[in-house]
Image (cartoon, rainbow, N blue to C red):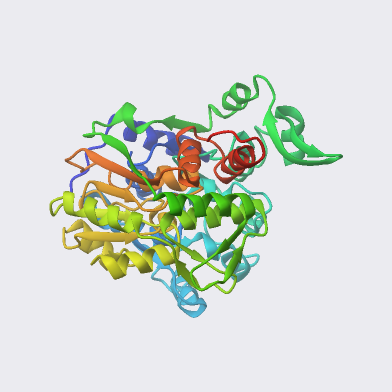
Length: 459
């Protein structure tokens, strides 16, 4: 159990939450959003005597692990009772019944996939006076069922807090749905259409159909000015002293025959595998995914059967792990066949449960295997190691940034190293460029692929 001495930015964050009914902390990963929020909730419940309970909506792994552990870690939060609303519908209902049976908790934590169920479960009798949205960017789509469900009960919520280090992963349009849940349209307008008309202009369209928008000149600054009194934004490097993070691209050269086969598949969208079967990609998006699979060493056919093409990345991964000299390594994969093939070659363990995470942080897992989506938000893995290897890259800039910060967090004592395994001459290079340029992921890489094929441009 630890004594809590807040950093100056955490003190400011606690005051920020208490001072207003709706707010957001746009804090970089590892800046202590969770303990700051729990501290503010504790003060509101026990010093200011506000009515509870509070609800935390979080990604599944964070809901299972982070909030209850964070409350149990700090001495000043020992009185807070945190209940996880997880498992089957029967188990979730049983946890929620404690609200009425005399054993009510202070904070209830549920994963974002069950928001619709939760709203329907309570109907007109929504009991939560305060709500924390962790990760707020999970509510960036006004078309999502979870967003619509939460909007229905927003009027019954007295206090609401949004937490994220990536508030606008795809552009300022992401901010409208997020901010609407906080202030019900007071700052950015009550409809998405009105927001677009004021701040955006069509970018790609076909007749009257608009496929994407871009900001009008000066729009980003105007939006940020509107949100200045609602959102506190800081970067981790501004407030914390960490050993740092080094990125290195491990460029792997395919043999001439393999590269020729790849280029033919890239051009024709048809690949003949060893047994004579043909694998076809029916669209640009499907082709880009197939090309990344090819670069990783195996590919799915139309029946989800796996065909191995090469072991270039597996060989390099094995060498990197050996070079680590026994230091624990976190390996991030893109496709299930990546994970299966890595397990066949290297002794490793997936980070699937809270027990796995505990064992990793205790140094009992030499090689950990994870998909970036499963560890992308909120998990504390910094005590277990300082080396991350991307076996296969992700399209998502948000997942990429979040996963890279799992080890580079307060408590880390060594410089973190992030390795990208990149097969030269393949789509790996385009995706990595898009990520480094903070482009919009797959759309940027598809455009680069189109230029490569149609115009003969280099990535």
